Length: 385
Image (cartoon, rainbow, N blue to C red; front, side, top):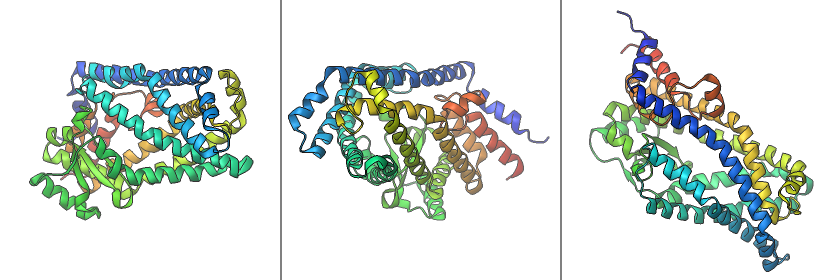
């Protein structure tokens, strides 16, 4: 009897059960609506901060002569204030909703503690970035937006280099994969791909999320492949090999640089549009600041959020392309299509596996699970072991 990839794909997806599929669809659709609500929250936060006049008072206190210091203080305090104002929404979106759908078991206290740490770290990073942005406005004149791509590329590269070494360990514990058959198999895979064997870790991802996941992060000497303990403990040896093959694909194919280039190019476009339309948005929010005045940062951040929402299909499409390539890498180099399929099905618990084509194009950072499983089954049909 010949192997039928379509029937095998349907069987894998249907194995989740009707209730689980309905829950995944509801969770995913609700997540799409959150994009719109996030934009509205961003607008409300910007309006409240502008109307409060707090940034104007801070600007007066710091003084106009120390421009870089003023830009840093305003940007840092704006980021902290914005997160405090939106804390109830953050609690709902990132903790309460996730808890309700069974996607996390993180205690509220731990969530708040990690959120506070995250805000503290990124407030400094955001402050430094916007010191650079406002510095470009002052030093490069009317074409400051054209230099923003280089600044964005530099900032992203520094973050990617430092993240796995200095930032991520503050939130999770990363350990080398324990000795045994799993580690032995992964060491062989890493050597074949030219990945140092000491750059494959397992981390306590269950602290924040119950999602079955793995990732590649960092660049150059800081690059590493990390497998969540959820995936490590809940997967068979073949599933771990198939998933790690996918992550090694990201590593070897350099997908991180594609994302850096895309975001850098988009930043040029975003800042160009902001340069041309900022006064209209500022008036709408009741701000009299010019685009070069740090006190207008709430308006500028809202504009970036709005433009990023419109650019999301392009960003998502680029990421999906990388995910397809990483799946193909796993199939070609690990050749465990059934293990890859069963691992992918486990991710369908939090990502509707059967979206419409339009929904996938607009909102999905990964190809649908159904599409990815079908790719694996087509590979199996054409490459019998």
